[in-house]
Length: 167
Length: 167
Image 1: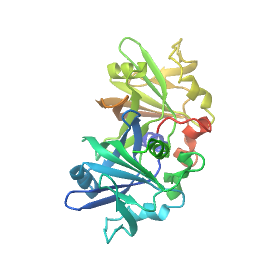
Image 2: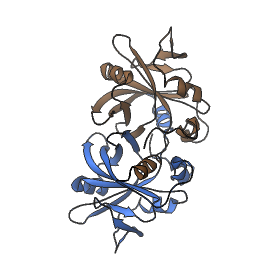
Image 3: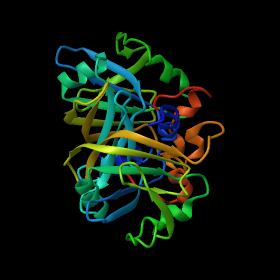
Image 4: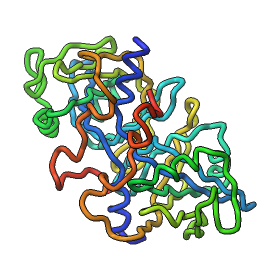
């Protein structure tokens, strides 16, 4: 396999930008920017998320049994970069962003135009990131979206001409 | 959970358009348009694909142990719709598109700007679509891509204002 061709082809996959959050039984909070996300079933509504296996977010979501995907919107590059950094939880804030607890206990960022909460269904422990499979159990939106929802999300390519995560 | 909010949020996930192909040991050919695709690991390079569990493509890729994702490019809406239809294999063609066998035996569409072949690693049998996990083992490109690869792929929203597959 030609490594450059493989990298170029895999980088053709378009991605949105999400902040994955979780809170474990000891109050440990995870909040990390992710992009490897796809739906995988309508009924039940399932998603698969690639999560770095040696990350704090992975440890906390595994312990918690629940997680949320906070969908970032247009212009929220600042929030995307904020959650590349280590998690710093304050008084009702995480990495400077206000949140509330969702019905699963997962932090719901006030700034996110939409958020879906998931029950952890299974983790496939393969690769440097593991495949986290979640079933949607609650959903929130700040307001209705005009036009196509997939135009309203922050896209990977809007983080910078040379920003990729994949390949 | 509010069903409309869940649907709107999940439809924020952006998707590219791919033709999933496979060939089984009896020469049975699968070729079906899919969009639920994400990378899930760098090392080894893994992807997860949601594939309808009662589809012919699913049966053939499971039997084959290999599959390919043919990445469609800008303007290839016709090819995307062609592979929504039942598979009709001809003499070196499938649904009217010329192909050759890749190193894994999976059909590589001549029209696709890029194609990655995968060894089937695991199938997670959950939901109305199952989660097909593949490890990239070969990659092909018709020619180098100018600019960002994720701008060169055909996007779901380019299939029509009201075309969605997800939610």
